[in-house]
Amino acid sequence: LDAEVVMAAADLALVVAHLETTSPADANHDGKLTAEKIAAGLERLRKFAAESLVVEFDGQPVRPGPARFSLDDLDNFHMEMNYPGARPARLRVRAALFAHLPPDHFHFLAVHEPGGTALGNKMLKPTDNSLELMLGAGTTTSTATAPRVSTFPDFLKLGVMHIWTGYDHLLFLLALLLVCGTFKSAVQVISFFTVANTLTLALAALNLVWVSGRVVEVA
Image (cartoon, rainbow, N blue to C red; front, side):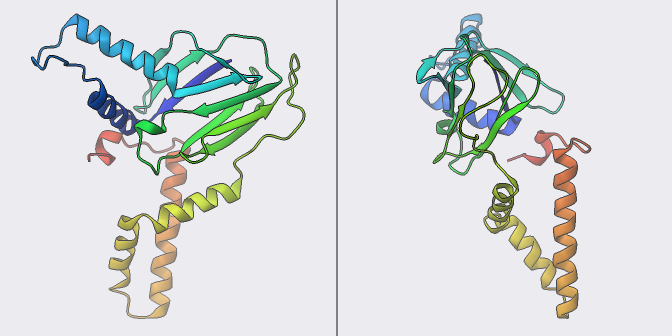
């Protein structure tokens, strides 16, 4: 099983900051960066990668091989790992990286055949952090119970939660409504705001427009 964990630069910064609190790279606090400290930091990152996913083949945990790291053009950090073993009849994948991230963090998990055929996907969160699939051992298609799939209602619910818990959105919208003199103008403002927000999100999701995380995540 080949696995890849992709993290935005902002999420990686949070992880590194959390790791620093438990195992600082500059343990002796001398302010110097040595080869030994770099090697120790890389080993700590490899350990984090190996523990970020808990993979089970037919109920048995499988340890991954050495992780490979890369950074793409969109400032996303990639951790690639291989979990050796024959194709299981039951596959369970649990994300164990939530301990290093904010409690409202979501992580999207997708499982594919080597040829690209989707077997299942799920939007994971701290209270529901695993996906289990029943596979036909030795075959190329999934069998038995259908996998849990994140569908349109799941993403619609996520979008509603994003708006209602996004105080910056609500305050910005409130500021726009304060200048509206009529109900009609208020409806127009809300509609235009919704359309604009949807378009920018779609353009970003499709990688048609990209802004560096260093700009939009300055905090």
